[in-house]
Image (tube, rainbow, N blue to C red; front, side):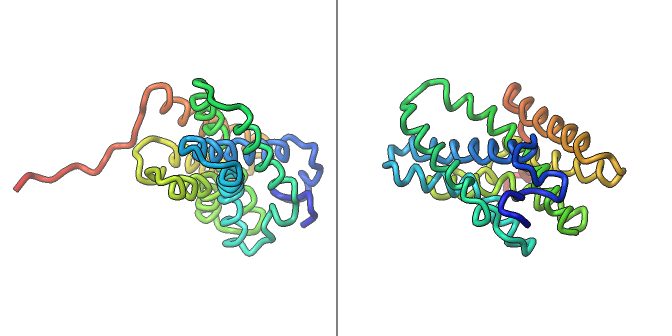
Length: 218
């Protein structure tokens, strides 16, 4: 693995490719959501930076550790730089009524994209299909879980809104299409679109997963 090879294999070693650019964009989006969590509590700039970094790279860090791979942001300092830039950007932006809603939609793109990219990296490492789906989901969601815990907010895992499900769907579709020998780029594009569509529909129409039915009252 070279210092600019954070994702999957020989075809995307060039940092100018779309997938690598999307990787940095995803880190920036998730880092921004971490900084926004700090903003809600009116923390200082150091806390902004910490929340941004832990959210931006948390999921990918866990994925790489579990797969026994070099941790991507240790190999390439630009990921942390992107997180710090996102934190400073949110700090300088100040309060804007529209920004939380906008980041919900950006987060939807990040969930779908990172579901695909995490699954792809696990697949390149030789993991089984089910583990690839798990790794895609962890990549997309774990940073947000840590962010919510640090901010004292209900974890995304404890909310019925469709968010984690979108990451699971994008990772599953990617793994299934690759299993059918679909080329990497079409498989990634379809999987990303399907995962984003599910999350977008949930945001637009308030879709939630059904809860466990309550039993008869005593």
